[in-house]
Image (spheres, rainbow, N blue to C red):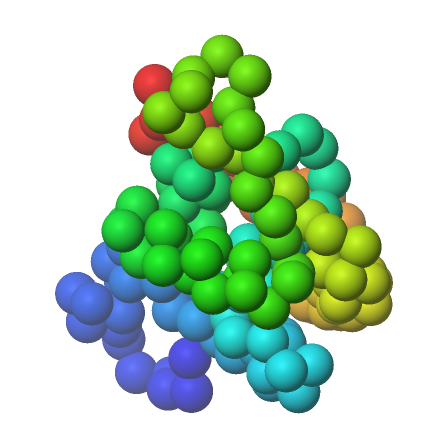
Length: 147
């Protein structure tokens, strides 16, 4: 924050602090995402699918922080662009899974490296113990929110 005055309610409110920090940190990296020709939501989808098994659209929507109808439309566009593909769900014939195509893997690989470097640069602003504690606290918060 750019002021030395005593913070008011909003500037000291946890939800605001988390949202503001996320906004500031993300904005630094989103310029790189946009320069790659992807939208931020496309980046989130590709990054979410980059490691691990194929995901259902519902699981993907949850990870990328989107409503399921929005994720469904995004997946359809990304399938048309050749970045991801749909697979039949082995246990649920009404559902599909999505995974990266070779083009999607090639598109996301450099961004994953850039994201890791960006995170390292952001965390370098904190002492090592604070950075590890911050990530641990955030994971714990998310785990409790999901249970």
